[in-house]
Image (cartoon, rainbow, N blue to C red):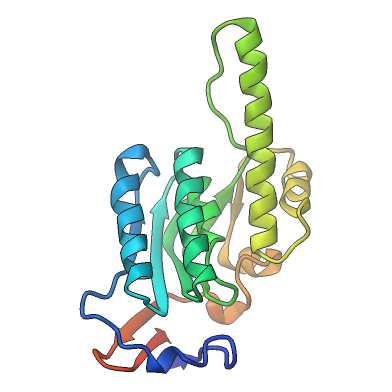
Length: 213
């Protein structure tokens, strides 16, 4: 059975009046989050924003990657939200590390996981080497980056800023794998109805709807 996911009245009451262009942008983040994929990804997001799309669907299948690249993509998605666009994030299989971070950038009530998908969150890490003074500086930068990512993710899922830091500490700071059901409990998903893979149906006129299959 297919049911339409209704847009919250008041927040997006003008959506049905938006004329959608035929090249409706959807975004797929596949594989490593790296410098190589950044220009094309940013161009796609900016294209959706310039076209004034009411909704951008972002499919994520990623083992993680570069922190700076992930943050740059997140900032572009934040600009879309400020414009009033709904960001729908979907995991059909996996979203690890920076992939999980980008998943939390979805709008409240518009984050979805397939029934066999999973998230993985952990402390950010990279190899630190070089002169002793540089090593200390890099370690401090890593600490700040890790704190920033966990706090932003916590706030994105509607929890206090130190929530995920505490969750990881309780898990002995090792990789934490999160099932869809656990994602509901932590706030990554709003409810059990979001354990599903939605599809976007666009009528090239004034109507569109997001369907949960």
